[in-house]
Amino acid sequence: MSEHSGHLSLFARKLGDETAPPLIILHGLLGTSDNWQSLGKRFAETHSVHVLDQRNHGRSPQYASHQY
Image (cartoon, rainbow, N blue to C red; front, side):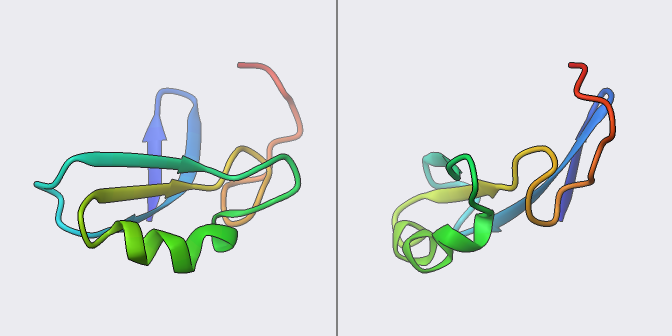
């Protein structure tokens, strides 16, 4: 699923019950949302988990410009 806000789109995995307390997980500098797949499923037992691919990582769009 791709999330879009203003000028930036990011890929996001959503796991768990969306009415549960939210938990947002960001990967490290060289990672992707794939790094959190197994733990994300465990956290989804009690939370609404949102695992994002940061800009120019994983399934998020690749931007040539790094302006925010």
